[in-house]
Length: 215
Image (cartoon, rainbow, N blue to C red; front, side, top):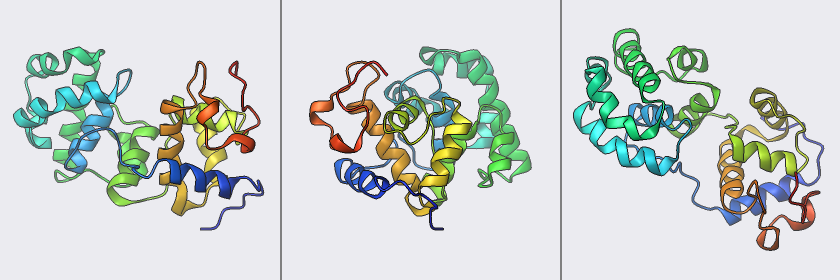
């Protein structure tokens, strides 16, 4: 679907970010839709690196939705304890695994409304799963992505749902996954919350906040 965007900067913003960040796979390690769902659910309020340190043991002990649905909560809490909010995450993972095993025949659903029914899965997580498993369009909004888009003047919103709507209206569907990932990486590695590294930013004259670090 073609975008209705009228911002003349956008094609060049997309081109430069895609050139700057050619590897656009998630930083979470996974081998299946189920593993990605678990990893994304665990990533709230922690780092992807921390999740990747926990999940090999988790997937070794509970390799399928059915196995995780039947997990002893205290054992799962022990495995993911270092990630924080481990009790809530344990409840969500076991409940989500049970729904997948019993309502979706052991397969992670692909429809947005079905994913959002799963405990611990919000819009960001659902878009990560849909875009990377099935290559479906969607804007993945996290702190880094929202900050980059606001600094670029592509949205003035701070609510993630409103940011998603604004950017989805601008970016063509076939570029949404790549833009989500490249803007995220740019926010992590260059356009940081404090002291953005404008000197090495590839967007330079395209960014109205270039050289300003108080946004």
